[in-house]
Image: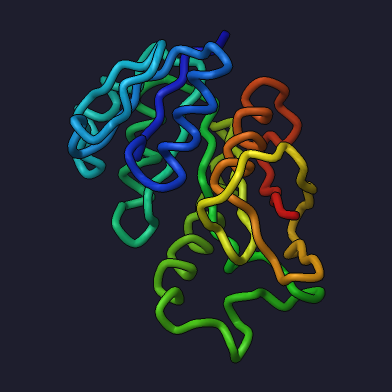
Length: 203
């Protein structure tokens, strides 16, 4: 079983990833600004962490097999996160990505489409910038997992598809539940298949 540090363990994606890790028997250091909001689960230790305090965050990450970032891009500093991971000595770094940088046609990103919701544009742009930053991080074994366009609460079905840089769609649109996303992310920790790559998950 792996020893995993999860940054953003109390958020929408983070809580589902935390439960999936715990249910599979992994040991988790769950990090959030308010650790009292972190679910009490087997093999989980809650810790307070400040995303902008590189030195303290690095100490929290030390000694783990993998680090997961499940935080909003617009509410964090990618350079600070990368600095903390590097300072911790952990090489495996997985990021809960966004859908905006996925392609809807060759060379055409979702975020650049005229009907892309303005309310989500700043977050999507920050996510795309973070992905570009990771693509230059040859010293880390990073993985950026983009959800489908609709990333919402739902059921843990275990039935989904994986892709690379193209937005996955189905008859009802483009979607994935937080619960099934968590399965795909933890699968990647247990059976790495996308080192220094972005991939996506959807129905």
